[in-house]
Image 1 (cartoon, rainbow, N blue to C red):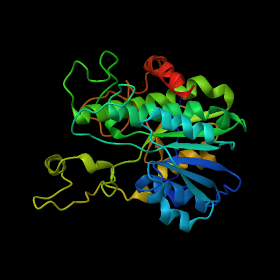
Image 2 (image 1 turned 90 degrees about the vertical axis):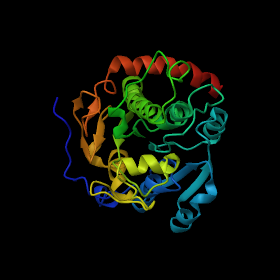
Image 3 (image 1 turned 180 degrees about the horizontal axis):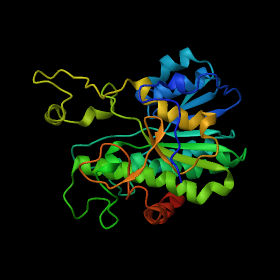
Length: 316
């Protein structure tokens, strides 16, 4: 099967990928939509006419966007707290056309756990979004046609999901390894939704937005690591490398998958730079593509079976 291509390059913006698309009457939720990539996703969808809800731990951070777009609102949610996810889902009443699972945390310096005992990056980036999708499934299936976009990362190329010790109970905690595992889990989440919910008219895709140093996702990364990867100079000033994107460029693939007619009927794929990516061997070398462990349908089903009882119990 050939990979899906679009006319948009890696420097296209969120506004450009849906230019001319009318989203009037469409309903969307964007987690982490008060800042960074999420905010640019919200702006692009709202400017095209969609009514958008920002799901965020601090709705007050969305004040500027709310003033900019009258059809945008903000509601509280803490993805690491499944009771908070349950409350959000129970309060939701509208049919839902688009769910953008964008919020995330990255490279917590020390091991932290959620109330369910899950490593915090895995709990926030993956489990909370899985619970949100499950809780909102009736809304997503109401029109018989909806899309879920799970924002992953190129970090999924660096580590598979460790089913023997996902919570770092036996192996030493490594901040980047934990982050990479959570982003692999995000790709597997989209694949699992595509495999299990297709009959309900729910499509799911995942994507890597690219390197966007100007967001606050990397706030937990130490200066030493930032210097080592070349995005901070010796004096502590951020450096924007040539390969980096602006937040609006980083949001382009997200918006493309959420709203473009070019992706009608597409489900289960992994995209970067506005193109579907090939399956590659994961490890330290590849710069693009989806790792074979992230594209493994058996792994997607295994992770689904591992997490679904936790999610369903928390949502009761």
